[in-house]
Length: 147
Image (cartoon, rainbow, N blue to C red; front, side, top):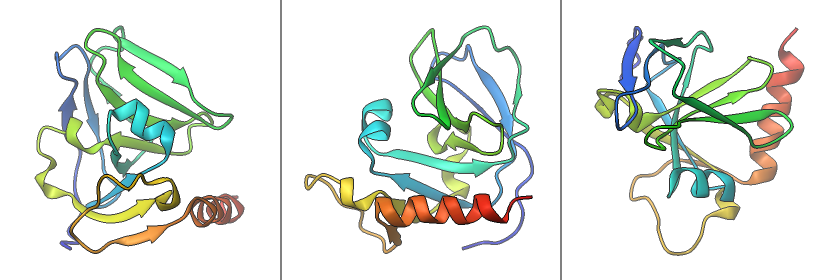
């Protein structure tokens, strides 16, 4: 994978009512197989970790759904596009990979909640694969390292 840093990247929803600028933390794209992401995205959730300092041109079309104690899903109220998952405390932001104007710079490297993956699809490339327990343990470890 190319490790050159990415600067801010532009993106938008299907109808263009929500336009944003986000800075990916790397070129790595992850896929989430949990039932919440699959229902939210209409398939797997494909996302890129970004700096939480997201810039929006206009937030009037944003809808927010609190999907758990710690997270919320952000979408366009006009067209329904799934756009962001963010930690309610502002510590993390995952941007839908396909909402970026050019998603070709991202590489699939990680699949999470693989024990929730249904049997009717699979990805061809080899990735790091984490179960729900492993995924949650990874996030817990990160939280413990954050002052």
